[in-house]
Image 1 (cartoon, rainbow, N blue to C red):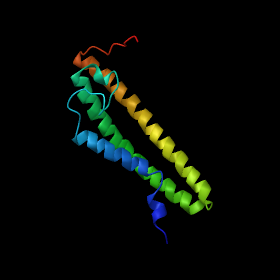
Image 2: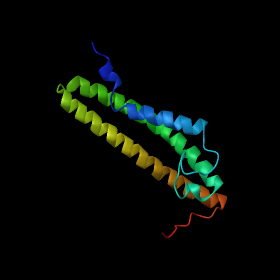
Image 3: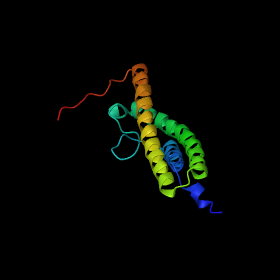
Image 4: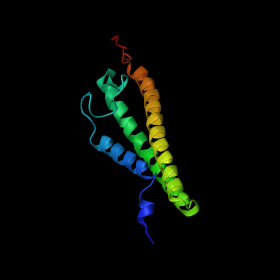
Length: 133
């Protein structure tokens, strides 16, 4: 039996989020920058907000990645077991892969922004100012 079909599927996005979350947790960006870390206006408003945003988003990515890994693997096994057409199985995998990635990304940003807004109030840091272009 070919077991490689169980390795490639929608659960890989969960593994990717876990790896990125672990990298961000154990190798966090030291200073506010434009290239690495959780980079929103709220997170870049102060060093405290930057550190807290990166800490919180890394933990969220690890937890959400574990969830997507488990659910994605279960869906992968179910589609391999019950869907006989290869193209249909592949399409289901791609839709779940894309939806999982987008869903986790959007949920992470929303949760981290909500957390930062509460934290900024407690730290008495000025909220970010929207710049005119």
